[in-house]
Structures are given as structure tokens and as C-alpha cells.
Image (cartoon, rainbow, N blue to C red; front, side):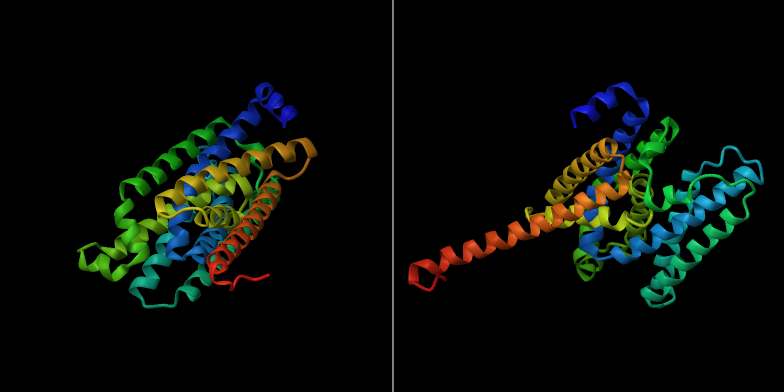
Length: 294
């Protein structure tokens, strides 16, 4: 890591990458906790794969229509928000199964993205960087947009903490208190969509769900309230993205995949430690009456 830290001081692209990982970690901790509490991980997966449609459409507009201002990240934000709204509106208003809606949006988003990419003349960017992430490609403009998205996601997530908490854990109680559950639910999906876009820049579309859920799952084992989970998950994600970037730089490996491997290993380690700790507590409780295991 010492070599990586020296390189960070020398190269601006590494500083941008490190900043992008830290910014994404904040939103990941806040919104990932809501996603886990509401159990809408599969919805986040559907939204993530729709992002490819926005990326492809934005690039098509840049090259074919000459819209130079149309940044691919801007297209990703639009596609993610549209997907979130469609999933929420159709499942709530049309009484359709969420699984059916998510599957349709998932497939249509991916198909649209591939068609736009196929139809873009001279398209030379590597599709793998969008699918599996390439945080080293983040530039100064991207960083400003990431910071803006992060501020919106975290600001709304914290300001409406109690409302979103009620919607996640007890819809009926929230309705009795006069909360517009449907509106807050769609808002939560939109915040999830923005967070997915943030994490896409770090680990790519395919592995977004892992980074959105694994740090929260680890934090949940050592926290007693949702706000504690948010803080701890954000810190864990920051550590994982920094270590993933450092290890991948030194070993010349894909940064997104390296980060996810670290997240998976950390989750398995936390699960093992939690299991052993629970077993030890049971043994201590049962020891006085002689029923402890030998």
C-alpha cells in the first residue's frame, strides 16, 4: 500500500479514483441500509442493468446527434430514475407482480443499451468498463457529478430518516400515522437508482448489488439500529474500495473485481466470527448448570 499511496500523491487520476470510491461509500452506507431493511435488493439489480440503456443512448446522442453535452453518466442517471419510477408505479398502481415488472425492465434496459451501442458509428469505448467497472477512468467532471449525486442521496436519506424507516419496517403503521407510503416508496427507489449509478463508476453494473449489500450485511452483525448500520457500512465500504484500488494498482488487476472479492471475503469472515461468538455465548450461559458442551 505504501507504493500506492506514493502514486496517489503523484497522479491525479488515482486521486480522482480514490475520491470517487469514498464518495460512493457514503451513499452506499445510507441507501444500502434502506435497501436491505426494505428487502428490495432484486429491484436494485433491475435498475442497475437498465443503466446500460442510458449509457448507450447518451453515447449515441453524442456521436450521431452531435450532443456533446450529453455525458454518459448523465444518461445513466436518467435511465436509472426512469427504471425506478416504472417499477414503483407499475407494481403499485397496476397490481402487477414486482418480479414480472423487474424482469421486463431489466431485459429491456440491457437490450436498448446494446442496440444503441451497436448503432453508434466508431464506438470505441470498452463495454467491459461499464459492465465490470473502471474507477481509474473517473475524471474531474465525473467527480463533480458524483459529489452532487452523493449530496442529494445522503441529504434526502438523512432528512427523511424517520419516514423512510417507517416505510421500510412497518407500512401499516406508517399509513396509520398519515404517511404517503407509495410516495416515499418511489422516492426510496429513486434514491436507490442514484446510488446504483454512483457504484457503477466503482465496480460496474454486474457487481453493483454485491457492494450495495455486503457491507450492510457485515455492519448489521455489529449494530443495534439502522443509523449505526449506515455509519458502519459506509466506513466498511470506504475501506474496501480503498484497499481494492490499492491492491489492484499494485498487482495490475481490475479494481472493481478486486473490491468485490475483498467484500465477499470480509462478509464470510464476519459471518464466521459472528457464529463462533454466538456459540461461545451459548456455552457460557449453559455452563453453570453443567449443560455446556465438552
